[in-house]
Length: 303
Image 1 (cartoon, rainbow, N blue to C red):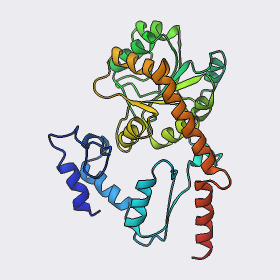
Image 2: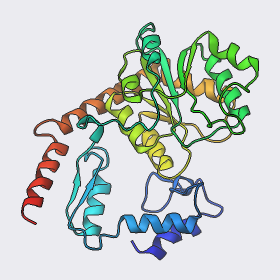
Image 3: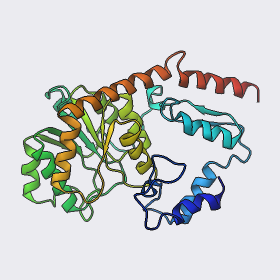
Image 4: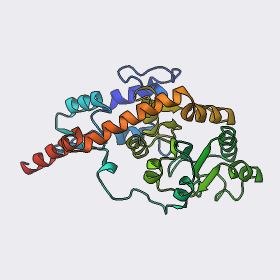
C-alpha cells in the first residue's frame, strides 16, 4: 500500500466515521490509528516507515498467528520477506515492562477478595482524564456493587497532581469497595484469581497480557493502535466491550455489569479462557510462536 493510498483512508473519512473502511473489516473510519500527540501527516509517515522494509531481510512481530492470521498473511505478501510472529513475548520473557514503581500492597488486598469478583481499572501511562470523568467513573464503579482495583497515575488527572484535590465525595465512593494505587504490578494483578475483568486503554502490551490470563476487557481506547485493538477485542475476538462517547456513571455501571455479571459475562469469560489456552499453547514446544522463533533463528544462521 502506497503512502497516497494510505492517506486516502483518512481523507475519505469525513462525514462517515461510523462506516466500515473498505478492505479493513471490522474497522470503521473512526478506528483508524491517529494520535493526539502528533499531526496526522507525521503519524502517517511513521506508519509508512514501519512497513518500509528497505534493507530488512525479515520481520519479527510480537503477536500470535491465531489472533490475526489473515493480517499476517497479507503483510507477508506485501513485504515479500519472511514475517515471524513470535509473541506474546511477555509469556516467554522475564524482563519487567513497567516504567514506574509498582505498589504491590494491592496483591494483599486482592487476596481477601472472592474469585472473579474484582475489576481492575488501569488506563496506561499516557491517558488522562478530567476531574468530571474521574468522578463519573467512581460513581459508576460504586453503583455496580463490585469491588475494584483502580490505578490512578500521578499526573493522569488533568489539572491535578493526584487525587488530593478531588472532592471528599470521591473518597466516600471508593472507600467501601475500591482500592487505589499509583501503579500496579499489572501482569501479577491480571493473573490473580480475584480479578474477573479489566478496564483498559487497550495498548498492545495490555491487550496481550489480558488475553494471556483469560481476563475479559472493558475497552476505553485513547489513541494510536488502541482503537484498533479495542475494535478487535469487541468484534473479532469477542472478549471485550467497547465503551465509546462521553463517559458518565450510567455507562460505567452498565459496562462493568455486562463484563462481570450474568450470562453474557460468563460466555465472554469462556471465550477469554479459550483464547488464553491457545496463546499458551502457541509458546510451548511445537506451538506456532515457538516454531516461528525456531525458524527465525534458523534463518539468521544462513544470512
